[in-house]
Structures are given as structure tokens and as C-alpha cells.
Image 1 (spheres, rainbow, N blue to C red):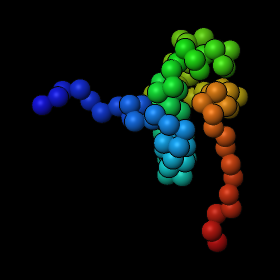
Image 2 (cartoon, rainbow, N blue to C red; image 1 turned 180 degrees about the vertical axis):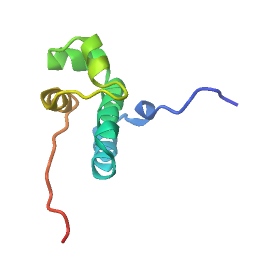
Image 3 (cartoon, rainbow, N blue to C red; image 1 turned 45 degrees about the vertical axis):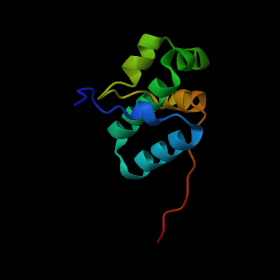
Image 4 (cartoon, helix red, strand yellow; image 1 turned 90 degrees about the vertical axis):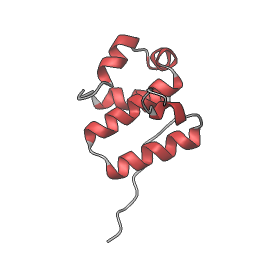
Length: 94
């Protein structure tokens, strides 16, 4: 049996999968889970590429997106833009 553990980043191989995953976490998750999900997406795309596009260093990105981190909102927005995502607001059903 393969001892390697499941890594969601291995499955985030298209913009559609990334969007579906992030939307599911945004809908169901708490802030810690959302930060972790954005970290998984950044890892799937490549931290070096995300670092270049955000102007942040790789160590800063890893720290900002690590378990339990509380990154600034501006950091989250930079990373979302770098991974090709955006936040949309839809009205909740009454």
C-alpha cells in the first residue's frame, strides 16, 4: 500500500478545479480552512510563480499561507489574483 498521504494540490490541475475547490471551501469553511485552501492552490500552481506575481518572497508566502496563519486581507487578494481567482458576492437565499 502506498504510504504517501493525500494532497489536494495534486488534483488542482485546471482553473475549473481550482475555482470549484475554492468556492466549496468559501461556502462551507471557516477562515482558517479558506487560508489553507488558498495555500493548497498556490502550491499546486507553484509558489515561485505566485511569489513572482505577488511581489512577495517565497518564505513570506509559505508563512502567510501556513496552517493557523492569519494573513492580511491584502495578501489574500494578491494571491487570489495571482492564481487567477476573484471573490464574488451572491445574495443568500432568504
